[in-house]
Image (cartoon, rainbow over the protein chains, first blue to last red):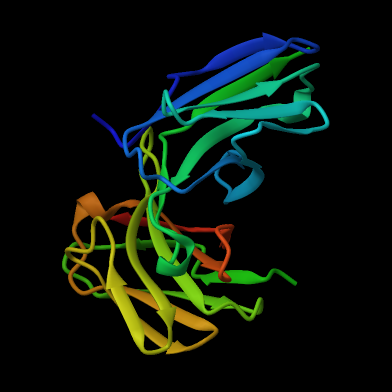
Length: 113
Length: 111
């Protein structure tokens, strides 16, 4: 079983649609959780951290379920500019041990006019 | 100017050649990382360094070595490149938090 596993893509949606990405992780001791965005052939960039209480940033909502070892990202009112690959990232080590980030394989999103 | 830079951005080389990829950062971070990314796979950690005197192996260190020349510089070497090392290589930095900041990547092709 992969340590971090994401929905296989690609997701093709029309502008304005709501789209949800799911991710599961295998290590119950994982400390922190993130969604990164990666545009084609470019570097990953932090989109948002994921907290147990859930968090929202504009059109983006991230949720964490520690009991089920499940993370989600919801994008509302999707824009053409949201087209990218979304990476689920889990920190398997405590912060003072350096942040061993494990990346999922990514889910590609394509938003069409 | 970019906070994390990588050179070269693209490189084509032949099997058996020695290659060095360089990473520099102006963020003042102590922690630096090297990853590779293959199509359809997540980023895999090759090596990481918490400070100038600290080097640690990641998931896939075989065939690679690193050098932390200064706080701001972290180089990755392929002593004898082979075709399955063809990939996109990223350098990243972080402070004592979790967020990592990535360089623009180096696309390496080994023929």
